Amino acid sequence: MKPVVLAFVVAGVGVWLFHLAALPLPWLLGPIFSCLAAALAGVPMDGIAPLNTTMRTILGVAVGATLTPAVLVTLPTMWPTLLLVPVMVGAIGLAGVPYFQRLCGYDFPTAYYATMPGGLQDMILFGEEAGANVRQLSLIHATRVLVIVSVLPFALKLIWSADLSQPPGAPTADIPLVQLAIMVVCAIAGWKIAARVGLFGASILGPLILAGAAASTGLLTFRPPAEAIWAAQFFIGMTIGTKYAGITMEEVRRDLIAGLGFCAILLVLTFLAVEAVYGFGLAPGMEALLALAPGGQAELTVLALIVGADVAFVVAHHMLRIFVVILGAPLMARVFAPRGRD
Image (cartoon, rainbow, N blue to C red; front, side):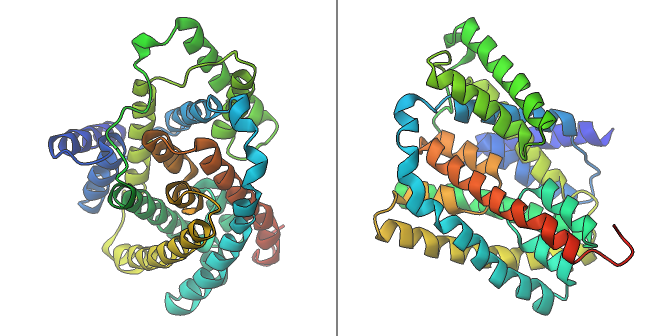
């Protein structure tokens, strides 16, 4: 059986088992854990990169559809917590780089790019240019996203009694065809235009911007249907889990354990930041946690949509985090590039 087919089968089994056990977020966490278990067992799996990227456009449209005039008016009030984002990135760097370099024995480029909470593809690209170990970067960032996305749903349910079972949108049958067509145009055109101009995170931010423009003018009045959001969750979960395909026991002992230790540091820093934000009354605790947790932008967008959090607030902070990380990455790549490389 081909690795792609195996990945679909394993992810589907994960969804079924999570539904059977009544566990939260079966369409997201089911594929993550089933694919992770299969990878650790040596099952060869692979995803379909173009399809995975396409699924992210759904999340971009979902966020953009929430940017109504009433929501846009609230954006300037976010500045106190937005200012914490660069501070948070700096704190992660100060804690993470020495951890990976001195405790785990990584070289500096690998330690730096393993620490920075940016997008997986971006950090691997810049890390490779700087001479980092690409395989280690991939495993560390996959572990970061996996742990954050796995821990947060249970924290949301335990602390705020968040309802993780509610549908993330209306059924397809309840949405007018014209609205569905507008969503498709926003998704595809937004993605392609953003990619053409070189916008980072083009598959999410392009559709977000175009859908946001449509929503703010009253042209788009619906979010993507529940079935589309579930499909996005499925492919995102499968992608995270299959990142571990081909992992060896040596990598488990070295990189997976190192990644888990780093996640413990991240969780402590995140909860300290959330306590500060909530304590000073800058934002509700649930929104602060979703906004400041250094997980994947797509994954935390899904969580915000499902629990009914302020999606614009959450996404604004993740956009700034990724921007801050990526802004410094090319400079660091040039400074720490191996000699003889342009």
